[in-house]
Image (cartoon, rainbow, N blue to C red; front, side, top):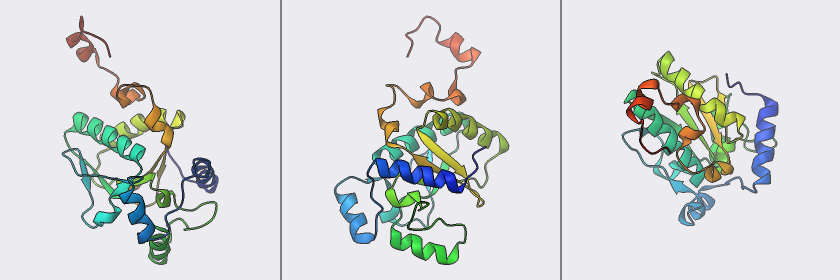
Length: 200
């Protein structure tokens, strides 16, 4: 449902350039952005787990990406009572260069198709262990957000879902992300249980 392509990577980089988001070169620059809170920490919760091998100083992303992760993981947890796992968040140019030595599928660290992880807007979600029902739910959740230009998911050859979150996600309509996603439309039963109550 969410195939990647050269053109899509170019479009994502063009949008990030318009937002004037720099590519983070090394650990010194990464630390500066973390201290300035331009990058914010992602913490584990009942709904969100982080891969054990992801270093503490890499468990950061842009504030709107964390907003999305919190919304998405909580909605998934409410539906299935199990957490999602994030395998990767922010990376540096130096780290991406090393990664490409061992992973032929990794995006370049420079150019018009550079990895969007270098700006801190992207995370990789593990698909391992997901049931077909759970993954179908994720697709249904993400599709209207993609169509609204808020996120851009890519199903990678590896068992991860690569998700770019654009800054305008933070300025979405008031209320929860349920207003954007058909995956959380109320059922007949939930409508009956809230009949007569205040509407969101």
